[in-house]
Length: 434
Image 1 (cartoon, rainbow, N blue to C red):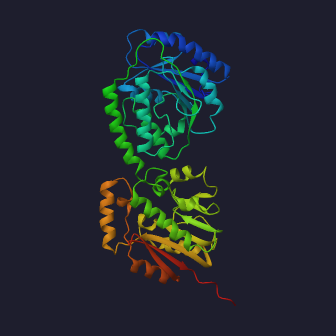
Image 2: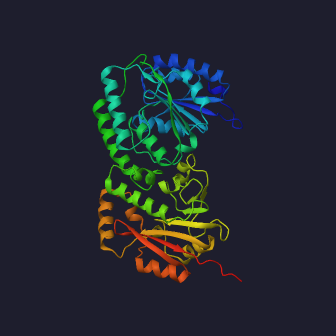
Image 3: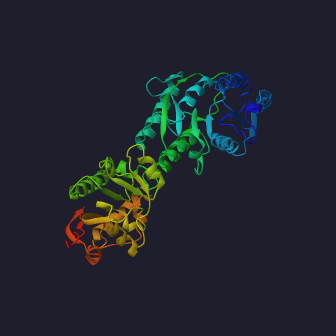
C-alpha cells in the first residue's frame, strides 16, 4: 500500500492510522481489504499501523502487507493516535480499529463527504446507524455518550466512535492530555471548541474479529470522568467558540438571564436593522439575530463557528477597525472594551466609522457598583475559565460618560443588566448643514 503512497513531490492525500496491539490475525484480513478500497478510490494513500508492543507477529504481518509500522512510545490508545498523527503529513487522516469492527469500504463514504466538514464520524447512533454489540456494552456506550452530550451541550451522538476522518489542520496545535480511550472525546470537544465543523455519518458497527478488546472498564471509566471534568471547564470558558451562543440558552438561570436581557436592550436600542457593525461579536445571539449586520471579532475560532451561520464576517481589532470612514449608521460594541487596554484609538475608531447622526451602543461592566465585584468573584470561582479574569480595564458609569461626551456624543439612554452591566445608547451629531 505504501509503495503507491507517493514520492516527496507527490505525497499521499490520505493516511489511515490503525492502532494495534496483538492484532496479527485481524490485520491479515483487514490490510488486503483496505488496499482494495484505496485502489478503487484511485487515491494516493498510506497505511500506518501503530504497534503498541505486540508479541504475536503484528509488526511482521503489517509490513508484509505493505503498511508502515510505527512503534508506539507513549502509553495507551491516546499515545497510539498521537504517534500515528505525527507519522504522516497527509491532509486527510482516517483512524480506524484493527479488530475488523470498522469495515474498510466505509472509506468511500468518508472520501465522498470530505468537503462537508473538517471531522467526519462514522456514527452508530444517528438515523441509519447500527451497532452489533452485547447488551451490557451497548448500555455503557449509551450512558457514556449521553452523559458527555448533555453535560457539555454537544450536538453529537457518538463521541466514542474511533472510526473518523480528520482534516489534518484541525489536529494541529491540539493540546491533548488524555492517554486512554477518553482521547476520542477530548479530540472532538477541542475541535468543536475551535469552531471546526463536525458531522456524523450513519455507520454499521460490526462485532470484532479475533482476539479480545484491550479496554479495561474500571480504568476507562475513571479516565472518562477526569476528562469530562476537564472538558466541562473548557466548554464553559472563553476558549470555546460557541460560548456566547450557548449562554443564551444556558440551564444556569443567571447566565441565561444576563444574555437575554443584554440581547433585548441592544436590539431595542437599534433604530434600524441595516448598516450595523457589531464589534467583538463573538458567537452571541445578537449577531445571529442581525443577519444583515457585519460581525467583527479578533478570535478566529469564533468567526469559524459563525461562518456557516452568518454571511458578513471580518477579522479585526477595535483599535484599528478595517472599514472606511462613516461606513455604518449603527455600531454595537458590547462587552469588548474591558478586555483591552484603555487607549484613545478605541474611541476614535468607533467615531470614525460611525456616520453623522448614527447610533453607538456601548456595553461594559460598571466597576463603580459593588454588586459587579461580588458577581465577578463568584463567577470566577464557579467558572474559572470564563470572562472574569479577562477584564483588564475597569470602567465606571462616570468614566464612560466623560469619554463619550468628550468625543462629542449625545447620550440618549443608559440601562443596566442585573444592576451592574451598563449599556449606553449615544448619538453622533448629524453633520451641520451649510
